[in-house]
Length: 407
Image: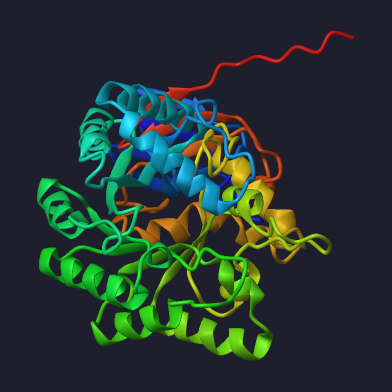
């Protein structure tokens, strides 16, 4: 046996378990394993969870907040500022920033990432090619899926449609899109499906990112997903416009999203920062209704989106902090709600991005994180140290930080 984790807590209210790892997979889960191992980690009752999944992030435009700030804090200025900066990005610049961001994220226990990577006629494939390079370089530390993302729109930016096909042929894992920043939105969605079907790839859209429920295309997307037989292969990020719908309109729409098998990725750090900027009083949270989506049977995840740029001028790569932010924002702190949050950064995003053999079970990939907490229910609110991160059966991160309180 390669690694033996002794006496871990997998679930509250259950006995502690030993977890054996062999040849990159979980080989045994028992109350006591007597077999010898090359490395023994004594968890002493600490919580073991599957590797965290960062299901929506932008590595190529991270860490640029100091170059040209978004002074109004609006989505419109964030898009404008970033569009002005992108032509100045070099491959070396993107490589260094994205690499630094990865090395912020990985020690916090993330073992899988889906990153949206931009291209357009103005900047070409500068960032996209760089992210594909980093995907290969970091494959032993984190699994990276790359989304072909047309931030500036497809029809609004002539030549982008051709680049979408080129990006898929270059190795993109997912077809991206942004209907609300293109016109017409429904034709944008149609083209994304056409490309996805041609290359047999999943779809991940920036969807209905707005304070108001005007001009939404989510219903069209749901019906298109069902008619094309793409249930379970479509994900959307943001979807903030739903928060503005009254119950009579929201409930049937949530039912339709669930029927279409569309996964929703809430991005609270960004959406709180950019949303409701024009509200003068009773300022809205402008975050997709996580609880209602969850209760309606929709697969809901929590993700980071951006780190220190015009869309989100803060963040350190710790997905637990983003999940912690979502707890008060979405009223997820109740006794029955709190246990539903951890799956939003583990099992749910794993399902959303199509990870195989994920989770703590015999035969699955050994992608796990040992947390410095003894109660699984507190895995988010403690924001515990990640003591060990194990990826593909190998220890990739070991945290030996020591805190001394001098009395």
